[in-house]
Amino acid sequence: MNGVPELLILKLLQQEEMYGYEIVQAISSRTGAVIAVGEGVVYPVLHGLERDGALTSRRKTINGRSRIYYSVTPAGSHRLADLSESWSSLTAAIQNLLTGEPHGEVVQ
Amino acid sequence: MNGVPELLILKLLQQEEMYGYEIVQAISSRTGAVIAVGEGVVYPVLHGLERDGALTSRRKTINGRSRIYYSVTPAGSHRLADLSESWSSLTAAIQNLLTGEPHGEVVQ
DNA sequence: TTGCAATACCTTGAACCGCGATGTATGCTG
DNA sequence: CAGCATACATCGCGGTTCAAGGTATTGCAA
Image (tube, rainbow over all chains, first blue to last red; front, side, top):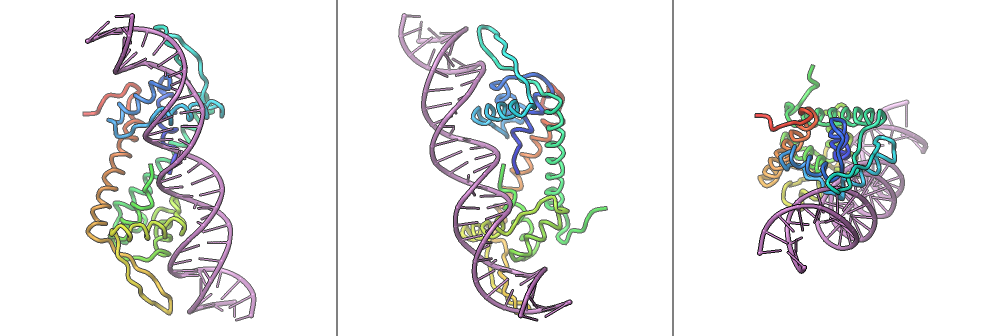
């Protein structure tokens, strides 16, 4: 039932290039603090995705601050599509069970 | 990002009294096999919920088969409401981020 | 100028959850 | 009587996630 941090990170990075520290705060702010993934979650995910070729990184120095910006590769884009798809079907299935009739049949 | 099996089990049991083995198949069948929780998931959850006073059980023998039927207590009903609520807000937050505008603001 | 908060990176340890495998026992069916 | 479905149960592995800690720099405030 997992992979949510990875899904969110890929989605954010597909919209725009970002660096780790920024992602942590973006997730918190864009979900109204409902979801709060720490740095201990984000950095390992970024490294893993880069190792798998789903992301590329480049260093940038801004205001004397060194940042590592990540972008999604085509492989990463594909991975995002997969994750997004399976997340949709998962939530749909749960939603169906939660709101379905007590003796629920398949809705046609 | 967890607690989904517990949520589903509580929901099913609130609709009608069920036993473990039945729950395993009900989840599989009512979600079109998208979600498949094994017996190794269901039984420990049932025991835990009963220990916490969220469920009560009673034995029944049907066709020479011994079954343990579970029902939700008021405490269990309350727990279901909580889980359901937090699941809703979680999925809403994710959905908002997934479908939101690249520089997404809070939708009013 | 010293000290603290924020920025920005990273790793590590433990906790927890969920899963597959396995075990027991019984009833039904071929 | 062999094998499958039913019905219960536990256990250990592995994967995720988190909290905590560690380093270094910038900038502001006391």
